[in-house]
Image (cartoon, one colour):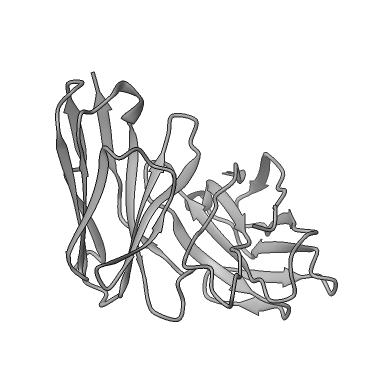
Length: 114
Length: 113
């Protein structure tokens, strides 16, 4: 798997944008970047994914650098309910498939405060 | 109308016992997974099944045996439970063509005494 590196923790004020960085310098050309989060005592939740273009959905935006070696997940208006562990994952792409094998690292603990 | 459900939510048992955790998804997905999250919060994949066929089998003790009676269900049976099996077990499912977009259940908290 392409190894990912994320800060251990971040803080954000409610209503402000939360920008969560991820380094994945060993990513291959056909490997996607996925973001999940895990709110306390709940199962992980898919947020967004991308290959090389920026992506946006109802939850977040994903900005991937041109060289694809890093990305940033953006929560545009963070709320208290966004407090969670955020995981950046690059699944392997062996023969065109990862078989769904997600490797969760330590992630970034995002704390949104009032 | 829960998408991925697990039973039981909590399971407390003695060492040496055999227990099962059930998982059901009503999303119509073909692929299902079991993950284990230990006390240090690391989440690791254990198994995945696609249309009742085992696809991923990570280095998991033989005491763990997944069973898929149909593509909507993936149960996890654990024999001879050990203290180190205490963890939270998550079931997940994903659609064909988007295996990395997984929907997780609420987890089963297993405590072995």
